[in-house]
Length: 201
Image (cartoon, rainbow, N blue to C red; front, side, top):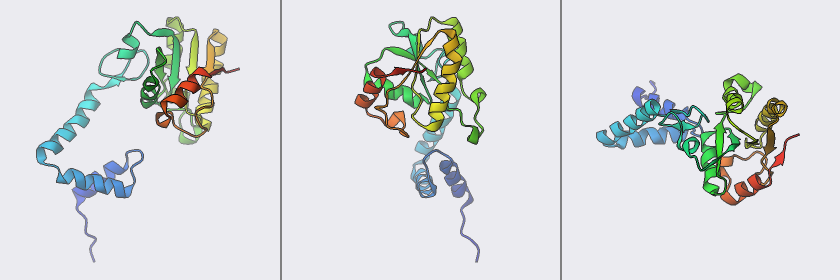
């Protein structure tokens, strides 16, 4: 007996399944939801994806997502640009910004060193951070990578690169549970973690 397959639907489902955190059943539900959309809404949805891809790029300073050459955070002269908070992901910037307590600037790595997954220092934005250290008056770098094995290894690696340059390197305090992601931490926990940061030796 032939398997009942609607090829375009399967293809759409497969694309959804490639997104992080989306399993097979959810991917199918999303594919069916798209099919139920009026044509104009489906077109608008597709255009929003293409527009984001086309118009969003990396900030030339911090590597965060932006529509401009320099993002609004880097362009804000009221911020303390001598303290750089290094995070794994653009969503971590939003998480720390939600606390409303730290008027500093960021550097987004877009990943962590993970040899098992074939990700070395060259695959993330460490080189850009070192360039900033050379050209900007940075006194402190806060390592705010997630408290995972890879996050810790990335922190230590960057710390070893920065120490000889006379930069103070601190790490978030462990108000953030080990194995957790910053984007899911509440504002109070993140504030305490930033306030209780310690120097990496």
